Image 1 (spheres, rainbow, N blue to C red):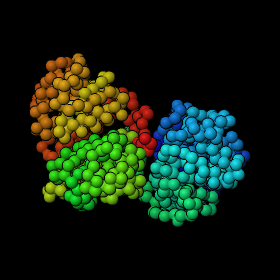
Image 2 (image 1 turned 90 degrees about the horizontal axis):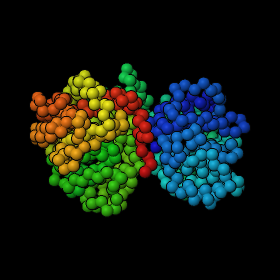
Image 3 (image 1 turned 30 degrees about the horizontal axis):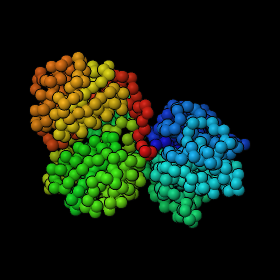
Image 4 (image 1 turned 180 degrees about the horizontal axis):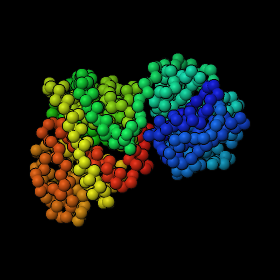
Length: 579
């Protein structure tokens, strides 16, 4: 989940260079940040908790540097636990993304006499590299042998100040190499290389990259043989500013107008996925968080368009005991980043079944995209906010389009979705309602049918963005337990995305109001049924996407009313690359 960056090349002002890259990758973790560089006699370290500053005044010319932005796994959020970590000599420094599952046993076996300066699992890496170098290994051999000792998914960048060399290895954590005019750079995200690299290369798992000022070499970790680096064009630098919006979250909610307009013209992209579904009797959709709820929503459209058995399973729950039809199973993974650890695990499990794999993904050069037999890009653009908004919308649209292709139905009518979204985004009543309920400590969200995954996503957005406790339930389950949570003034959102759903919604609204609850109806509720109504046209089969946008905007304004920055909610990161 953490972001790592490295530079080797001609002398340059390394602190602003590294800091700029870290800010691009800050969505991967923002508990703390750090930069290490060659200061002449040792590696100098600058490490702080919190966000990467917008400017750093240090003037430091160097030929090698590394940086890190952290999402804490081991040890609290402190300056000492921030990366980089160095060895006892001050010549070796390391940044690490991942979890070292056997860190304690390695300490006991190799590092019993080392005085550690942090609580992290990551700090063992520079000390292990030093241990191997003290036992006559070269720097690169020491890095290779150290990595082979580590259990778990990791990416490490190690620099040796004395030789001006950098070495990097990864296993299940994304890493890219960029070729610059003045040297080389390594990063967790290709966008961190977009401004400065002429070409980039994906670093495969279990390959060692060794950089000097003038050379870049890649070796197979097992055999030690050199492997050719496969260079690709650098991705175009994507506009990642907020523009006139105060937060990326609300900007990306508004971006959905353009995203839906664009996807409406790209329905041919889903034909390979539709054909794959037609060839299989069992379809398993999977994902994590918002992607899982998008899969749950899409499964309902697909179930109307195919006779295949459809399962939806959270990626973290996919296991050898999960129902599979072997070669007759198609596993469809939904993911924004394409790097989510649990989704990678699920895809690997699918491969053991002999299943066909597909992904609906935003990053088409990602680990999961490279694993999948069928890739459908969602074309949502860069999503900087931790809160997924336009990626959910794009995933749902892709599955809606797939269902339409399967059913042989026209999908041109979705072209009017973007104009309807604009009217919802201009509804000032949503912000007013959000402010009215923001001071509560708990909230219920109800939905059935297509409204149920929208209710689940709404509750998730409220929890993530504002820390208000929100729970989603099926509307029909209200009387079977959740009604006990209703007290005077407790907000209850009731989502009805169709006329059939509205029947249950009206009954639930009456039950909640009779017990003092404050009911917000979302849909075509009759006058007087709810305390407040957010009117959404529910006549189309994609009406749930209109409800989705209204609820995204509501969750955003609840966060603002509670004084929370929804772009960077506490304890979370955008890309979850560890289990």
